[in-house]
Amino acid sequence: MRSEVPATLPLRDTPQVYGVVTRFLHWTVAGLVLWQLLGMGLRKIFGRQPFVDVVAGWHQAVGTVLFVLIVARIAWALSNLRNRPRHGRHFTGRAASLGHALLYAVMFSVAAVGLLRAYGNDRAFAPFGFTIFPAQDPPVAWMVQLGGLLHGELGWVLATLVLGHVVMVGVHESMWRDGTLARMAGRPGRPPARRSKAADAAPTR
Ligand code: HEM
Image: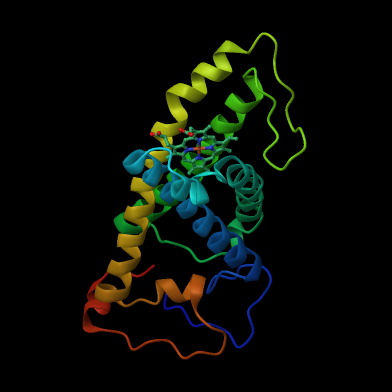
């Protein structure tokens, strides 16, 4: 289906566009996830340097905020499931649905496993200056081990999924020109971009 952005954005999603709440959650989570990956990428390359800590030093606080936003995002997506833009039942539509489900699952797991490790270890967890989880004595071994095993690896899996997501948006915009980006970013009242010949050949979403 071709996306046409209505004159005023609705609060909830519609079959044509994502609403204000979904857009806020999408772009805030996207920005903060990139912040997390940038910080950890810099730490991998340069180690623990003061300039790296400007970004990486916020990792636990930003991760905690992200966990709350991701839970809200999943709940909001589920409550809008019937009235948001559909991807279709053809191959690319199903691949898009699967890709998005994977993004949600991995985003949630990365943050959840990070917090589980913070809960189970022998240091108090106080990323905002007050204690959220007290130190465990003795530490909860399985929580710490699970975090050590999965958190970083899932973080890099998430980075790969985000890259694939961005590449696919690029394909929609440059080859199929079906207005997919406008559903999440289009300005209200803006006329849709001209449809290319390639879009007519591509599967509709
Ligand atoms: C969606 C949110 C998050 C993302 C995308 C993310 C991503 C990552 C990545 C990619 C790494 C690097 C792993 C490596 O060294 O290979 C990492 C490390 C780490 N993360 Fe997260 N993380 C998130 C949330 C959290 C949360 C909620 C916590 C804890 C409260 C946390 C605590 C840590 C810690 C302690 C490390 C080790 C950092 C260090 O070496 O200083 N993360 N994270």
